[in-house]
View (cartoon, rainbow, N blue to C red):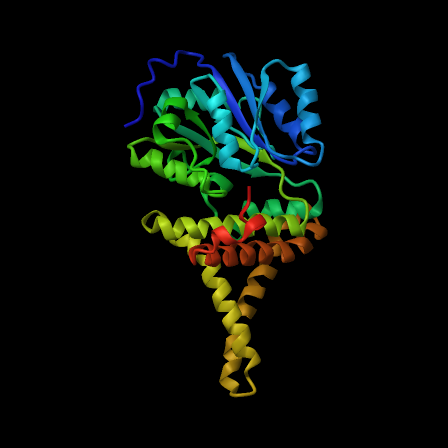
Length: 342
């Protein structure tokens, strides 16, 4: 059951926790969005610093020198779950807000989240990841994030009705719930949010989605960065699907199945010299190409360049995620070094 809220008070203190690694170009905007919250209760910002090489540490030092609410902890291995756990342990307040260096919180985010926790008794509250691109490529990625053909149309990408959820984007937690659940599993370099929410729910806790929380998110800025992100995400989702099969819906299997069908179809089509019937193998890849071509209309409001980029973005997302899922499901996660994510 959701926890009793009598000990939180009207304006419980809030701890923002953020793992940081090579985020010099995004960090200041993300942190400023935390400091500018209209929440009247006490707050602190705890940054877990990984071994950055792009000047991130200097950026953090400058921010901390101007703002006493900012503190830092070392995160030597640079992984996201380890950084989150170190920041949580170093924080002090009863509400813990998980934030990302690529995310921009709207000014009423904390106030709204605390109000929802007090109204529902939820252990974790989250909302919509509102991807917002600046360049045509980023705009195409943002369109893919928010569409059913891109990432499956889940509520935390596209919005939807408020209510209990399997998982939510980022998350605003009751500290007691986090501690009782055992914090983030540091063995999962990606998918750690879903896995933690699974444990919270298994203990009778309540994970709550509300569309009133919208977090601005800046997508990856290049094809290579996008491919690395989704290959890593798919890899760990495959491992989660293998370890917790009863908790993984059919939507997670669509990209890996599509990768297999399209690959087999291309191979079959190339063997048409053996028999004309092998040409039927091209049905799957041609059908996929038509789907991608039709989907370019989703980016029409961003202009022709974003529409053109969407033709590349969708296959990159689908094939890297699907391939990663297959490899993760086949227990190859631990053997892929830098591609497993941080």
